[in-house]
Amino acid sequence: MYRNDIMRSMKTCFNRLNAMLLIVFMVMSGLSLVAQGGNGDLPGDPDAGKKLFNAQCAACHKLDKRLVGPAMAGITERRSTEWLIKWIRNNAELRASGDKDAIAVYEEYNRSAMPAFPLLSDQDILDILAYTIVGDKPAAPAGDAGVVATGTAPSDQGSGVNIWILALLSAFLLIHLLILIKIKNTLRILKGEEPTSAFEDLSKGVQVAVKNRKVIMVSTIILSVFLLKELYWGLMSIGVEQGYMPEQPIAFSHKIHAGDNGIDCKYCHYGAEKGKHSNIPSAALCMNCHTYIQEGPKYGTQEIDKIYAAVGFDRETNSYIPGYDQRPVKWIRVHNLPDLAYFNHAQHVNVAGLECQTCHGPVEEMEVLYQHSELTMGWCIDCHRQTEINVDNGYYKDLHDKLKEKYKTQKVTAEMIGGLECGKCHY
Ligand code: HEC
Ligand code: HEC
Ligand code: HEC
Ligand code: HEC
Ligand code: HEC
Ligand code: HEC
Image (cartoon, rainbow, N blue to C red; front, side):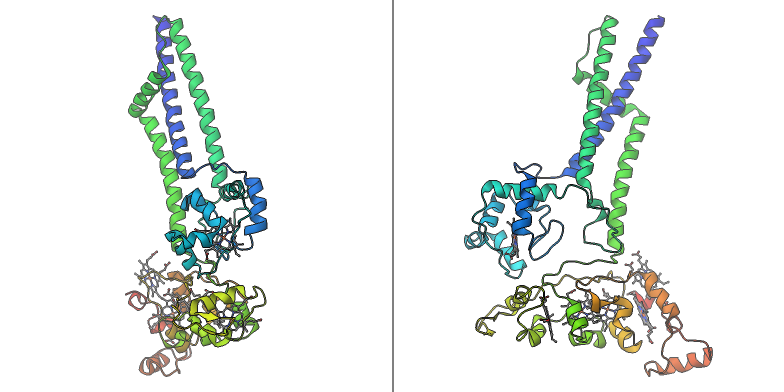
């Protein structure tokens, strides 16, 4: 009797433990699958690949960033291995065969052709691709995303390491589970019962787990924490984009133009004075100077050739190609308020007389343009509270006269002319 009781309680105990471990195991392996995603292993040597990449590709490609060509991390998820081998060996040939994807990337990158690499063997290319998957192993220091964002969400970082930890944990738990089943069966034999199969045990474990509240609670908590974390990073990266610095299709430098050569912001962004939007200049405007300035100090002819590819200018003959199908340069937008907010440049540049730099920072020093200010509602409001307006600018004469009378010696701020009213900034 007594002995049977012990056996029974031990049995329940093992069942519960089994169930717990099983659930944790399933969640873990589920997570590692999610984390890994897609095209896993390629038969290549990443170390050899890294050497080749640095020697042959790094001038134009980075793993995590767009340079002259697209970022290479994740390329094996976007394209098949077969396609990649063909492209890397001779992309012009692939395009000539009418391959749609090949033509599309070429167009996207303003027809700046990538050289052919006829000397790379299949294995060399597989090595390079393996390197694009594995990357540089020692995880990059967790970058200060707020200040120098590179466009990757913080949650992407170090996921390679996580996969290994998850895999190890899963293996560890699986071994424990098997040992427990072994012990339990030994006990059953001692008791004179038939041993059960591992499969029976597992399915019993699941049954118990589904009925056991604690197990359900624990796994719900694990899952929720995971989801909340994803949601949190998601929301963080949707909201505030301060520091956002995308790689542009042409390495246009504000430092060279607005800084070193002192070109006025409004020569290019003439829209800022006139209306809501500050325009981005067309390639035709670039040609005012670049018909003559055909080489740059840093990239030589390479980047300026992209302007020529956009407008159809032939540097050999120094003339426009007749009948050329012009294509606008696809600049990547840096600043972007949500649709619910209304912002008007002329109001701030002309009426308020603010310098571009007050909001956009030291643009004339930027090699690559980035978002300097938060662009949150609090940011707009703070400035409206603090900034004194010019009541003699002749724009709202009646209102200004009333305000001058009302506040006399006090300073009149943007707040006082209605700068905090919801309707002024929201449609
Ligand atoms: C001189 C610059 C340059 C070099 C060197 C270069 N590439 Fe490229 N690559 C580009 C450009 C530009 C593109 C975009 C497509 C286009 O304009 O032809 C591109 C596109 C690609 C693509 C297609 C990307 C996609 O999204 O489909 C792959 C893959 C690629 N390169 C791999 C390599 C590899 C591997 C090497 C080294 C062996 C290499 N590239 C060397 C400039 C270069
Ligand atoms: C020679 C023309 C030229 C001059 C001069 C110039 N810009 Fe630009 N600007 C551009 C081009 C082209 C882009 C788009 C590419 C980029 O973002 O770098 C741009 C982008 C920008 C953007 C980001 C737009 C977005 O996508 O949100 C800001 C802000 C900006 N310029 C401000 C300035 C300020 C301030 C000055 C003066 C200090 C200035 N620019 C001078 C050509 C010019
Ligand atoms: C008012 C004249 C002017 C305009 C307009 C102009 N640039 Fe430039 N650009 C220059 C000068 C000057 C240089 C520097 C040449 C040098 O130092 O050798 C330059 C250099 C460059 C370079 C070479 C960078 C390097 O380091 O190699 C690029 C690329 C470039 N400009 C792109 C553009 C684009 C794109 C536009 C139109 C949005 C544009 N420029 C409009 C005057 C201009
Ligand atoms: C009071 C702050 C402020 C000042 C001053 C200001 N900007 Fe902006 N700028 C913004 C905001 C906010 C946006 C984003 C607007 C949007 O997404 O609708 C922006 C966007 C831009 C853009 C992207 C195109 C667009 O209009 O959305 C350019 C280019 C630009 N600014 C250039 C300039 C230049 C050049 C000056 C000076 C002549 C200037 N800005 C002055 C706040 C400012
Ligand atoms: C650097 C200071 C500054 C920032 C930042 C700023 N503003 Fe302003 N804003 C002003 C000033 C000054 C005026 C008053 C102009 C005048 O004299 O009429 C103004 C006026 C306005 C007006 C017109 C108010 C009225 O009653 O006519 C609107 C709308 C506005 N701002 C929206 C915004 C939005 C939206 C943002 C944020 C995206 C923003 N502002 C950021 C300084 C700023
Ligand atoms: C000076 C301009 C300005 C005024 C005044 C203003 N807002 Fe906003 N508001 C903004 C901007 C800009 C955003 C977008 C900010 C962002 O994306 O972080 C915004 C965002 C919001 C949002 C969305 C919040 C979010 O996180 O997406 C709400 C809701 C909102 N405002 C309500 C109001 C109400 C209510 C008032 C009046 C009491 C008001 N706003 C007055 C500029 C203003």
